[in-house]
Length: 345
Ligand code: NAD
Ligand code: TYD
Image (cartoon, rainbow, N blue to C red):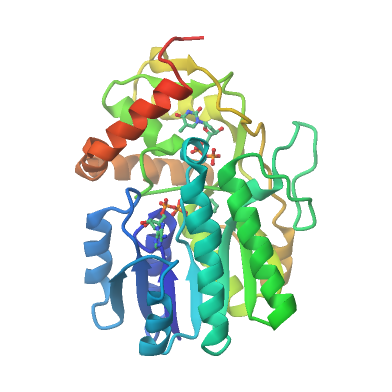
């Protein structure tokens, strides 16, 4: 196969490229990434060294005509789209950039995939498109309504619907995956787990939004990548596949666990003002991919957490470099000014 992977210098995309190069020795991969704040230069180098003869990098935007050039030049037969603005908090500050990449960018990928010979298109989406659950609600299935709460999840829902419309209208080869919250090495330290680990290691306070009883359904990133691989090969066209490890954990419980493992005091926990429209609980039913494609997650929550924490301990230069960048400071300052004035609740 000749694959175009977009957003491959980000967290999940980089793991997926690593997975492809290690498990499919005959596949060739082109990585198109705009190298936004979320992409680490070291990730780019790391991927380049994995399999130099089967991997190439193109610096560019999924919303540009570069997409068509890459498909033609590299005879691409499959696109897997990870490129996105991916953080809910940022989407509240700047919804426009989310619509630009997550909607307009996806429309451009779909256009070129169609124009140049029905290239298979895998859209990597999220459980956040389903909205929020109450504690007693059954978990989301692929038939649940789309009720996104944030500009991020709304832009992802829009892309899913666009892709499905291209399946129906143009018979394009489309499959969609919707996964729960990922964790693992190389995640940008604006997301909960790496932020807690990094702050704890530095003895900094840990901002907990609202009461901290929100629940997320956690999956180790390698399990997500294996699932996307199976959907890409075996998924039924025009279908959606939920991906989750069924590991629901309240935020405060995860934070306490990390502090315990790192032997840091609970006094680092600081309750701050809640995120607007904060989804209370995510829980995802993944029976379809398990029963129809035989996918099973391999990494339990405790094991994944331990591997993740150790990676951040051993790679402090990696996350410190990101946190020291001017844009991150700018963002953090703006974010704090808008939603989390340092005052404790
Ligand atoms: P990330 O923010 O770590 O990485 C995104 C990557 O996309 C970066 O390398 C960035 O440079 C690149 N990018 C951004 N805009 C681009 C553009 N216009 N053109 C080309 N490249 C661009 O994101 P992630 O956490 O790895 O998420 C990857 C995908 O998985 C996203 O689509 C996200 O919605 C989805 N997803 C994420 C999670 C999660 O827990 N992180 C869960 C489910 C689904
Ligand atoms: P996040 O990693 O942003 O993922 P998402 O909002 O897409 O699920 O947040 C995970 C949970 O952690 C969510 O309930 C918000 C909460 N959270 C905090 O309490 N403090 C923080 O500093 C961050 C980044 C998140």
